[in-house]
Length: 220
Image (tube, rainbow, N blue to C red):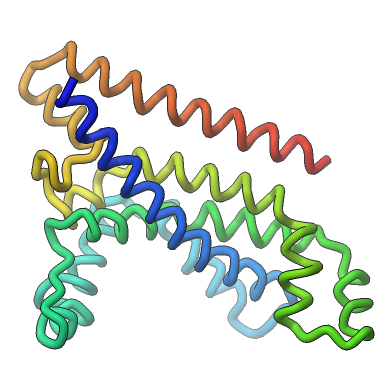
């Protein structure tokens, strides 16, 4: 039971924090790119969608280059604040947030693009600023599509493996998430443990997918 509970709790914690990060960034970017076209928008869109198509190990390598102890940002985090994200659950959060970001961003952008611009224009004529238009008009009207994207991102964060393994490693009780625990159980020949772990993560993800599907249906 302990072998199941610990990675489950860690996976839920990592997925929750990763989803919060991805949601904050993805919703803001989705709203920005949905508002109006600008030069280079297609390039920015492609860049944000890269984690969907790149191998997870490539994403993990990019993150090591960026936030590793000797990385572009990591060296300064270590030198100035004594922060090392490699082989920590916080590093797993960053890896999971990067791979789940496209799901939030794409869902948010599509939802914002479906909002009738006349409502926002009417709010502006009444003196509302852009932030107020976003919070009181655009966000409430797009919330179902955004929520569906966020739920999908949570499911994706729960199942993240490759980038998490490269950044956080496989430290039981510290960085070993459910997907990594399944891999280790299979490697060790512990089929029963691998089966239970697989069933748990599958049931959670199915529940999230069903809920997100109902949200998407409710939009139409």
